[in-house]
Amino acid sequence: MSERSAIEVFNNGGIIAYPTEAVFGIGCDPDNEQALQRLLNVKNRSKDKGLILLAGNYAQLVPYIDESQIPPDM
Image 1 (cartoon, rainbow, N blue to C red):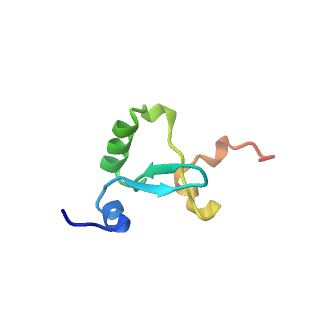
Image 2 (cartoon, rainbow, N blue to C red):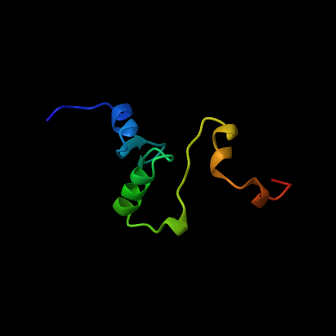
């Protein structure tokens, strides 16, 4: 079996594991519908419950959120 980089797996619609402060997380490309479905299946999670998005800054999240749902004081 050949080793593939996490970037290659991510770019090809796969699921990757990544370290967080306390545990490993699993994730995928949020713009890839097949990858998202695969991740939801692995997690045995309904899409209605949503998923956590990781970003380096707020601007990276804007395409994925409805800012009108965020209270003005937040």
